[in-house]
Amino acid sequence: MGYTKAEILGILKEEGVKFLRLQITDILGVVKNVEVPESQFEKALDGEIMFDGSSIEGFTRIEESDMLLKPDYNTFVLLPEGLENGGRGRAARLICDVTYPDGRPFEGDPRYVLKRQVERLQKLGFDNMYAGPEPEFFLFLRTPEGLPTVETHDRAGYFDLAPIDKGEEAKRDMVNALVAMGFEIEAAHHEVAPGQHEIDFKYADALTTADNIATFKWVVKRIALNHGLHATFLPKPIRGINGSGMHTHLSLFKDGQNAFYDPEAEYQLSRTALHFIAGLLEHAEGMVAITNPLVNSYKRLTPGYEAPTNIAWSASNRSAMIRIPARRGVGTRAELRMPDPSCNPYLALAVMAAAGLDGIERGLLPPPPVQRNIYHMSVRERRKHKIRELPGTLREALEALRKDPVIREALGEHVYSHFVQAKQMEWDDYRVTVHQWELDRYLATY
Ligand code: ADP
Ligand code: MG
Ligand code: MG
Ligand code: MG
Ligand code: MG
Image (tube, rainbow, N blue to C red; front, side, top):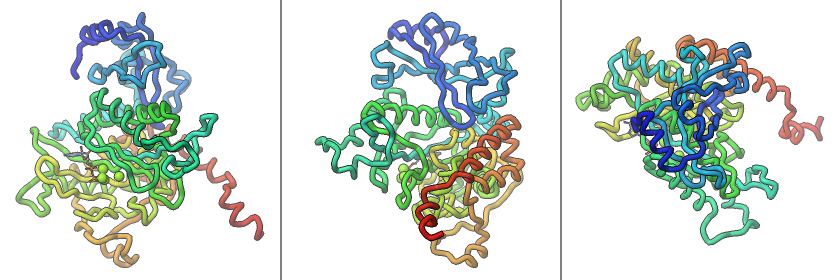
């Protein structure tokens, strides 16, 4: 970490690196790579590689198509075995900021959206927001032609049963690759549903964590492919069994101390923590289009599968949108449970920070925590506890985003308008599609 240009050039030479990957993420959360050969390394490190922004979803208007890739030297890694271009030589990776030719940051760059929130919280005197994600995913089989299925190796008895589970083998390779890239893996385990997995890595400052999530998804998909499997972060690939979430643990630090911890206070949570939690609750509806951005996301956010549907916080209960894990001291944190791994990690962490900071700036306080299982409460009890429901569809979520100036401002006009436009089209397309369910249910009867 903290390399200089000369050090990176030295490593590239020493390791015989042939390709440098310049990585960015578009507004919809898709990782894009621009790969340059040896002759361009110096130019790439100087941030002089141009790319056509108009070729990337949601990035820019045609008239501003020439963008520059400015590498963040802190993100330099050599790509380990399994992630290279099939024997065509070693490769390394740098994550980039996107700028106009004159060097101004590009407003459509999600990384810039997050950096603005980090700046904002530092102006309020915090060191940073720290975030630890728990991304879940499914490993599915591919057809002999290589197309993804929703069939899991755990269940598909007719496939070759190797002595070691195919999925476990793939997961071990994923962990090894991630560790080689500098990830500190805290846990890798099988999840509730067949074929479902979770790999947790150590929390870091918001920008590093967003970079890590983007890299993580790419690595997991790539290694799965090496094993003939398809890794998917689709939130609800199969009806009736648990979907994939990405619980996100959040804390603020000030002067090197966890600012959420106060040993004297009720629940041992500081005023700062309570304000931040209140901000997350206040803006839950407005941010859910960003943290849960697919039509499919809302099929996970249904009662009964450990995914929250209610806007509440709890010190223990996993049915609430925010849970406060029991750890105190340096590990004091809020766990936000609605996000799913299909989100753009930069935008998602940016809106979480914006929501929490709004709570701090306005001195908001949350209602008392709900300790009971909310799934089992009646409508009246929920009303008494002032528990609102999360939007039930992408359409409702977009409506709530439109009505939330704090979240809109955090995204900035460019990202907001491109995001909403793309998502509105996605919703409209879904709405006019005749689904198999409708045929199964109605065709014979009507
Ligand atoms: P769960 O109990 O919900 O399964 P895990 O133990 O799997 O939670 O994940 C905890 C996550 O919280 C990890 O990513 C961990 O690094 C992170 N974490 C720990 N302390 C903090 C903190 N102070 N701020 C933010 N994240 C933290
Ligand atoms: Mg976990
Ligand atoms: Mg867990
Ligand atoms: Mg889990
Ligand atoms: Mg969790």
